[in-house]
Image 1 (spheres, rainbow, N blue to C red):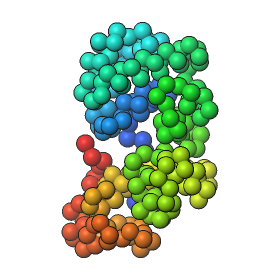
Image 2 (image 1 turned 180 degrees about the vertical axis):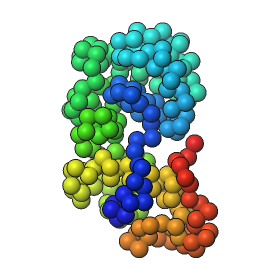
Image 3 (image 1 turned 90 degrees about the vertical axis):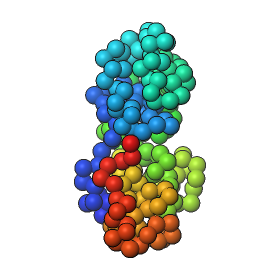
Length: 219
């Protein structure tokens, strides 16, 4: 199934824009409860003003709130960015650490965010269990676990470590483009023959299903 997904989405990659580890860490934190496209739209102004941990840690709260305001939960997210940046400056001399053990000690950074940064910046394989990934691996019958950490370990046991990062991208892209939560495009799914959930929630008619396929993730 992963091999066919890789063939279906050869361009799969992290859909959050970033230039370095700090930017990816910040935009991943900001992506909670909003879409990657909205975060990408807010990113240029945010990093033009505060390009690194030292400048962001010293940012006036009011200005930072204005910059992240369109993303929702702006007060909470502003607090996260201030605390996160300060911790990087105080404990890691302004450099984003490159290990899971260190990353998860940062305020607001869990295993999902840490694995995004490790896999896409430091080339350290990691499984990103976001809502799409968790939903699809249960649909696929790969696991029945619902806790993200347990899902991460269960799926990690099924695939070689070297495949983890791209596996995450392939599954997430499929979840955003074909295997949607409410009405998956089952009849236009390249892995339907192996999927135990085929036809349960979505149409199996190829023409009807094809109308549901998205060329990119949701806005």
